Image (cartoon, rainbow, N blue to C red; front, side, top):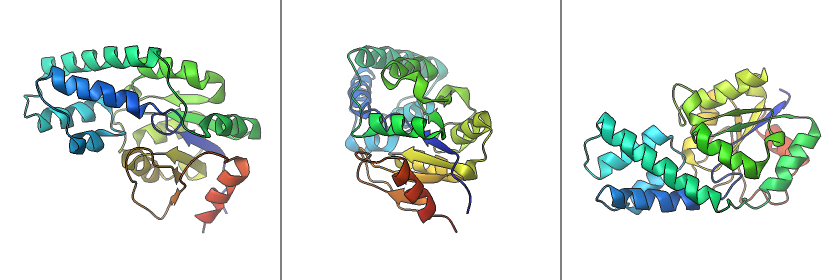
Length: 223
């Protein structure tokens, strides 16, 4: 049986209940662009990287995704999310205690997020940088989730093969990225359902989970 050596945490919707803040910004951005954010479009961009999210929004609103328009939209969205994050970012149930338990266990840890570094640094003021040996953001890899690049980079920085990693995710996008990288995935859905998969274990909440529970999840998908 392969040993579990590291836990890789997603951020938005997994550790922090920040998807609701992104929801505010996305709806306001759609209005700023002269349109309306439909539930279908919002669900499609949950967990997406900034460029992928904007591409989906521009397509849904039938707007020209020219370089200037995308840059302006990115700047507007980042400024608005910065404002919202500054008001305080709530934790997801059980996330704070689980982070502390995993770090105390001696397992290596990483934060792996599609959010850009500038905003992730702001969120880390809430999360606590001491909980992570490495952090990887969406603007630091060639391709964001659902591609495996962010998780592969985190494993590389930790010096641990992805096969020895357990990822904790809340979205279809994130689960697909972690699974494609070769990690086992603990899925705790937040805003939208996440499909099942051979290397995915679903739980309703992180509340009450500790190191032993993560080990149990890990063992349940080992050959």
